[in-house]
Length: 148
Image (cartoon, rainbow, N blue to C red; front, side, top):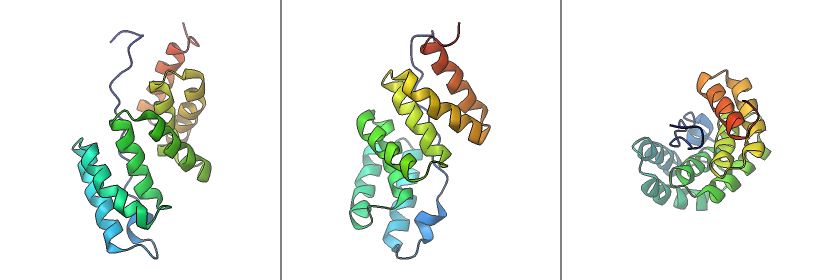
């Protein structure tokens, strides 16, 4: 891979969200949709995951777990504006959500918006200490011309 090509998008799954599974008012349907969509995304089947997620989100549009999975599916399908919009809302609602912040940075990177991506990637790397997140920061810094 040379410096100008972007690597294949490999964002790890958001953690299984207990709030998505056992939230007061959440139905068994939502928990089932979450588990099924998570499994489908793990098998790289984003279209099928979206088919499972959309009906559940119609019933509970504020469910962060389901919305995180929808954002992941959008990223996998390269529906970058939809991913960006969903992730921006998730980060605005919970700035401490490291997964959403990192995914937002990656969606901006894939749109070649490196300067916008860097603050999100840097913060996610600092929040998690994940070496892969640190690598993402270095790669985007290089793409943005911030490092020689």
